[in-house]
Amino acid sequence: MTETGDPGQQSWRQLGILPAIEYWIATVQGFWAASAETNSYMEASGKAEQELEKIEQQIVQLESAAGDNQEAHRQLAMLQEQVANLRKQVTAAMGPWQRTELARHPQRPYMLDWVELMFTDWSELHGDRRFGDDPALVCGMAKFHGEDVLVIGHQKGRDVKQRVHRNFGQANPEGYRKAMRLMRLAEKFNRPIFTFVDTQGAYPGLGAEERGQAEAIAYNLREMAKLTVPVIVTVTGEGGSGGALAIAIGDRVLMLENSVYSVISPEGCASIMWRDSTKRELAAQALRITAPDMMEMGIIDAIVPEPPGGAHRDYQGAAAALDAVLQTNLAELKKLTVQQLLDGRYNKFRKMAQFFTEE
Image (tube, rainbow, N blue to C red):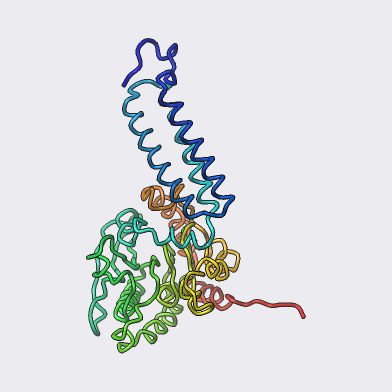
């Protein structure tokens, strides 16, 4: 599809396609505003997301058809900006439960995606030298902007077969023992450690309990506090209970904008408090599990922004934002002495959860 005549004289709009897309965008905006007022957020956001994806597909097709028409590209860019702004409105209106659902999005970047996007010379290492290997917790050596580092993180699966193999990202004791074995190796060779947290929690099965799940987690908490190399933690999806904390004792703790961090899942909390898991939205609100909540309480050090609509929509954009924050924090930590690292890490976690009220 191309225009005839002088593009300066004949507007791309005369084809009647762009006005239709603009009307479509306006319709989605009106639908979203009306639905938001009735508090039917999940239905509204789901439909708005579907319509926005259709609009984006139409814009991409029109860009291919526009050829060298600069006016057409300019107008399409304006439409893309409108779509991005509407997507930001949808994301900004999310409550804690909606953030939780977004943190669990099946297309969200996982550990190995971050490795591919931000690290080079990746070499995975296996086994705890006691029982076996745990594919739910992936560990390996890599280079980060030319520097040798250790990378550790939970890995979920994309399809049913992968999810079963990865145990849905829920680690067994051997996973945490593998992580600590390699942290000690990184410490020996003075390599910084990056961890990526994304799990509902440690695996609660009988075998895990028999092999010392609680002891493995507790041991990691103690030993990570004593590591003499920089440790940077990033909660990329779900940060669930001790299963997350077992690789989350670091000098810097970061959270992606749409991730969550909690001692228990909203469903679990609702089941305990009200004997009704359907009260998960109320539980999520009470738990204060979002990144802004964590920042306000001093649990984390920074919030990493995500592309409009979430990290699953733009892997490259999400990785670029996180990469910049990781570089900055690593540079700051490398300036500190070992004693300063240890004292800072100790004080950071020692001061958490101290709340005082005036009588």
